Amino acid sequence: MPGFPALVGRSIFRSSSHALRSTHLTTGVAAAPPLLHRFGSRRALIIQTLSGPVRIERLSDSDSGIIELKLDRPEAKNAIGKEMLRGLQNAIETIGNDSSANVVVVSSSVPKVFCAGADLKERKLMSASEVQQFVNSLRSTFSSLEELSVPTVAVIEGAALGGGLEMALSCDLRVCGEQSTFSLPETGLAIIPGAGGTQRLPRIVGRSAAKELIFTGRRISGKEAVSMGLVNYCVPAGEAHHKALEIARDINQKGPLAIRMAKQAINKGLEVDMPSALDAEEECYEQLLDTQDRLEGLAAFAEKRKPSCAALRCAAPRSCCC
Ligand code: COA
Image (cartoon, rainbow, N blue to C red; front, side, top):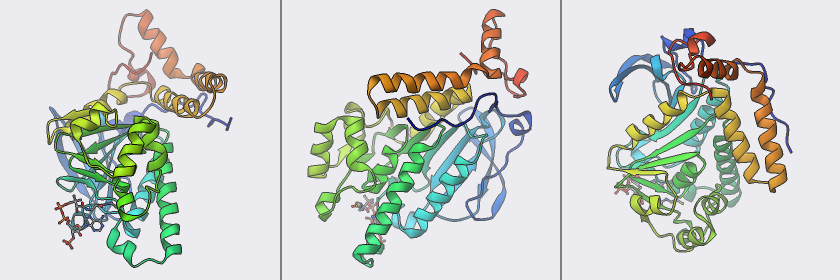
């Protein structure tokens, strides 16, 4: 069993300095002035990076801890070429190094498409060894996305095809709009899904359904995707981001360290036999024993109040512990 990160005694609740201001995460490009956005009934200050096909936005105020990763290459429907791949790698690394991150929402800024998969125009110009290198790199990038210690939620409005679907499969949860379409069309191009699709799809929807989708390349709708468990929610078109944010906010209210350990226990446990899986759970639980978060949760229960992150230097009261 691989080792666990040393988290004992380290509170990863947000400090009050994070709660009332917004800061930006860079992906190698300059930051723009703060923009005021409205999400649902709440407002959140956001600082956006200026350009590049992958942007990161960090929400603030009561949404501090939620990070948005946005795909933004409209001219190619977010197809993943070398530049997009570099942007994804930078963004994932930046988020991985940000201890104030609690949950990540992965979405597209391009209407009616999540991601059209690999950049087939760029691919046509590559030699076989360049293709191999690119696909290996894409595979490991999606593994890094999957291995982020915090939960990730993919928001799909429109097409999630090939590598675009593989990216969504690397997230912990998926929410789509009703007009969305999903497909792994690679066999139609005489290749196979090579960025984790042959492995993650059967783990999510079962081997038989995955084989049918991969062998035929059939496009399915959002409704079919939810019925086979490919997505967690299928909502009316245009509402997927709102639903994802609702889920992200729910997660953001919980004990951040507990959420990380829950993700780790589930992911590690699913890859091993049951006794080893239960050992993984034990190790994850042990990481939580000496945390302030756990003590605050117990104190709140005894005092019949909601756990207060104020006690833990967080500005907003929230039901953070259990
Ligand atoms: N690679 C490179 N360019 C792509 C692309 C891809 N995977 N997908 C779309 N584009 C480009 C198109 O070539 C087009 O460029 P052009 O304006 O220079 O002609 C532009 O994006 C717009 O695409 P278009 O097909 O006109 O948009 P649409 O809204 O009608 O359809 C899609 C969008 C995503 C449904 C459609 O483009 C599509 O099916 N793409 C192929 C996806 C695919 O097979 N991916 C699997 C890779 S293994």
